[in-house]
Image (cartoon, rainbow, N blue to C red; front, side, top):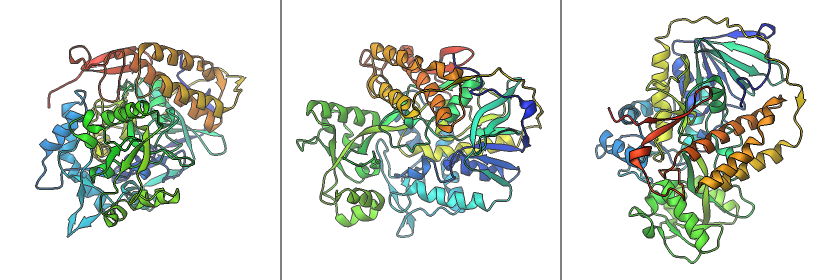
Length: 538
């Protein structure tokens, strides 16, 4: 049993801070939402590292929005629904496709410089998109440019107080409302923060897996603290593995953007054979789950640990201009994209599930909101359409602020007594524990799953539950507790869903089953696990 709080505390003995809006996390979701909220409210922004440490910073491809006369919201909605494999909420998709362009204009107003060609925004195409609609910046450094612009605005905003290197331990709730958060400061002391509303912008769970495109901070903190607080967690079994991460001796699993395939790159096995025609009519631009499993099949068939990405048939000038970051990174390891095939393999990339929200980003706990990858708005379904994540963050960030502006004041002084001392000291190295968890997730809860493996994975994970009875204080220990929580949610959701759909593939149930499983998985700490049918009404 995972406890309500990860540490013991007595609220009466803690210093208190009061504000209007608490934003937990950075990235595009946290930065954008904090800026919008600051127009009418005092904002406290809490990040466990610096403002620049987030998944957004590493986003290469771009942001999807209808910005061309050749495109339409209906086209983008259709592409999103197809990629989502029947689990998208139509109402959420409708919000995204119609409000995305306004959000992009806000990013531009905040100082984001998207690439242009001949006086128009340069648009590219990515997997499962029917139109060229992806805006990008500095070729393949879109996320970094967005973060740069937003960080500059946040740091110069007098209405935003910034706490960097602070760790949010848990949410403070009373009467099914969120009152604020329990925060650990850099020196190890703790403080209770109270506010009108609390927004989780904490990113995803990439560190559940040994190989990931996510940074070290992606430990599922927001999902874990929301689960402990009693919020509904939705569709955690759907993990997106990016098909093409650099797989080369001595190099980290660096993301090779889907935009490379969008600009014409081929996938080849180690025999030099193109193979995607054997798996999907869209070839290299098939949905990510299809491409990732195809690559795994080819690796197994050829007894290799990688396949190749080949864009050598395109102009060297185009490659250097369009993908300067990827080009330079590969060159550092002796790989020249203009002449060499790049060895790639799948890596954990994006969490489709998360904390369930409504169309204004509010969770099942009143005054608690979630935005970005930590949330499950219903947009992504079983498989996120490329580049929809950045647009989702700004669209729903704006909606969250609109809802907060309608909230009445709440009581800030909740009563919490001491929960009882945990006097067991954690033993064993965190590196060993974390690596063991990651290996179990890769082996049993990865790209391909079955009942026996999932049961074994759950058995391995549950052996670590005594962790929660230990005295946790170091950030690494607390992150591991959050990873373990999320790992259990993913494995339980995957075991429960007896079908294959999108980012969830069961070898013992290889077919999609709309009759029984066109439904969301909901896991709640207090109510257990159940399913909820997809709502098709717009």
